[in-house]
Amino acid sequence: MGNSKHPFSHMVGARTYIFRDLKDLMAKATPLRSGDCLAGLAAASAEERVAAQMTLAAVPLATFLSNLLIPYEQDEISRLIVDDHDAAAFSRISHLTVGDFRNWLLSDAVDEQMLTAVAPGITPEMAAAVSKIMRVQDLILAAKKCRAVTRFRNTIGLAGSLSTRLQPNHPTDDASGIAASILDGLLYGSGDAVIGINPATDNVPQVIKIVSMLDDIIQRYQIPTQSCVLTHVTNTIEAINRGAPVDLVFQSIAGTEAANLSFGIDLALLAEARDAALSLQRGTVGDNVMYFETGQGSALSANAHHGIDQQTCEARAYAVARKFQPLLVNSVVGFIGPEYLYDGKQIIRAGLEDHFCAKLLGLPMGCDVCYTNHAEADQDDMDVLLTLLGAAGCTFVMGIPGSDDIMLNYQTTSFHDALYVRRLLGSKPAPEFDAWLKNMRIFSEGEQVKLGTALPAVFQQALLRIF
Image 1 (cartoon, rainbow, N blue to C red):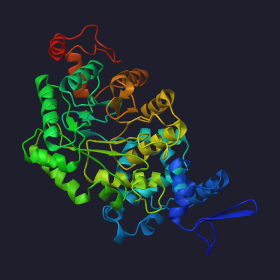
Image 2: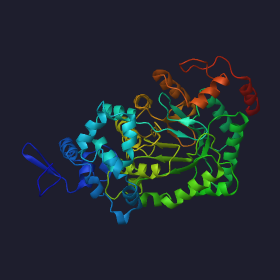
Image 3: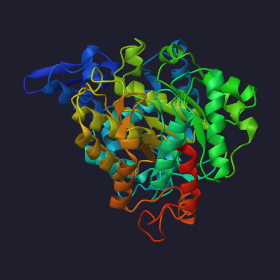
Image 4: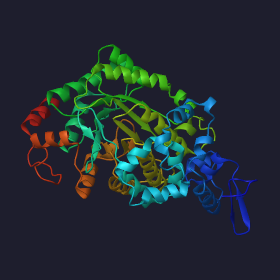
C-alpha cells in the first residue's frame, strides 16, 4: 500500500503516486465522472486512477472505522454511522482488506443469508470503497445476492419480483389527468411499489387533496398498494396532523449533515415524521412507512460534500435511509444532470454502484433509470441500465406514460419498459398486487407476465368517468 512516510501511495513504473489521505484516495479511485471533475477531486489520469484503486484495494476495512472522512464532532451522519455500527456483525469480515472484501462478496461461499447477517457491520464508506474496484459484472453479481424485503400493503423485494412506482405526474395537478395516468399504469401492471406523485403545486392543502384522491382510488378498487405525495417532510407531517390519509412519508436525503440541512431536514425531523406515519397504522401487512430518494451529486450541488467524492457521499445517504426502515429507497440516478453524470456510460455505472451499495447495506433499493434532456444520453442507454438492474435484482423502477415525465421534464422508464424487463427475466410484481391483477383480469394466469385480452368492466366504467 505504501511506506511508513506515505501510507496511501503506489508506484507505477518509476513514478510514485501519493494520496494525501483516505478521502483523497477514495476520490482518485472513483471511475471517471463529471461531478468529481467539477469539484476538482478526480484523478488526473487513468494511470493515477488505477494506482489509487490498487492502493485502495490494500486498505483494511477496519481503517474506515478509525479514519472518518468527516469528523465525528462535525457531522451527525458520521455520528450515526459510528454509533449504529454493529461490531459483532463486522467481526466476520474485520480481517479483510477492500480487495479481499471484493473477493469475499463474489465467492460462491457467500450467500443471501450471510450478506444479511453482515450488513449491519458494513459502513457506507466500506461499501463505496469496494464498489470503486469492481467491474460492472461484479456490481451486478454481488447485488443479486443481497435481498431486502419490506411490507406495507404488499410485500416488496421477494426473489423473482420486480416492482414499479406508478408516477402519474401532471403539470397542473389536474385530477382527470392524474386519474387517466393511474388507470393507464394499472392496466400495464404498474404501481405495486407505490402510486407516487410529485405535486406541481407544493403546499399542504394540495398535498391533502392529492393524497385523498389516491386513497379513494386505492380503497374503491381495493388495490393492495400504497400512495405517496412526494412533498417536503414537514408538509406531510402537517397533512397527517390535519387528518389526511397518508400512507408513506417521502423525503430526499443526502450523505452529509450540511447537505440535509440544505434540504431543510435532520435526523430528528425524519424520526418525527416516521412516528407520525406509524401512528396512523394504515399498513395491512407491515409497517415500513418511509420512502427516500437519493442521487449522486446532491451534496456537491449544495457545496456540502466536505471534499468527498460524490459516490461516497451518496453511499453515506444510505446510512440515513436504513436508520428509518424504509419501504422504498431509490437513486434518481441521472436526474441532477450532466454536470454530475455527463453521459450514458457514467449514468449506467452510477446506477449500478448505487444499487449495489444500498443493497449491500440492507436497503430495499430501486432506481429511477433516467436522464435529463441536456445530458449525452438517450433511451438506448436507459434500456441497457434497466436490463442490467433487472439482472442485479433491483427492487423497483419507475413507470411513466411514454417514458416522458411532463411535469418534471425528464426522461425515465415507461409502463412498457417495466413489462419488457419482467418478461425478459420472468419477474413478477409483489405477490398481493400480482393476485389483484389476475383477479381483475389485467394479467392472465400463468408463470409469465401477460396482459389480459380485454379491458375489465370496472375500468371501462372508470374511463367513462374520466373522459
